[in-house]
Image (spheres, rainbow, N blue to C red):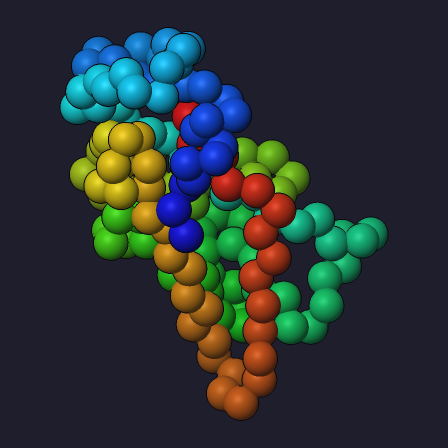
Length: 138
């Protein structure tokens, strides 16, 4: 998954200058250097009704991506997410070992990031799911 996608960038009309300052884009033909952009990524999971999730659901857990059923492996631009920091009821900040919350300018180009998710389960033969409600890049 690439975030934000081109349509989201066009709708929100944002780009970042060399110092990482956000400016409103007036023309899609304007280009800027993104070397100063440091991207903070938040992943929000679906809230389970009455805080009770189905048996096939794997979430991030309280302080990391590991639960008693397995864990969610997340990569940003082919770099492993080292930790997830609980932000609120269902949202988590993605952290790396090098820059903490900051992911750099994005290798997918123009302030965009390639995210991949993989479920690693402890119980073989069972299908598990992760339900993502939103991914936010700031």
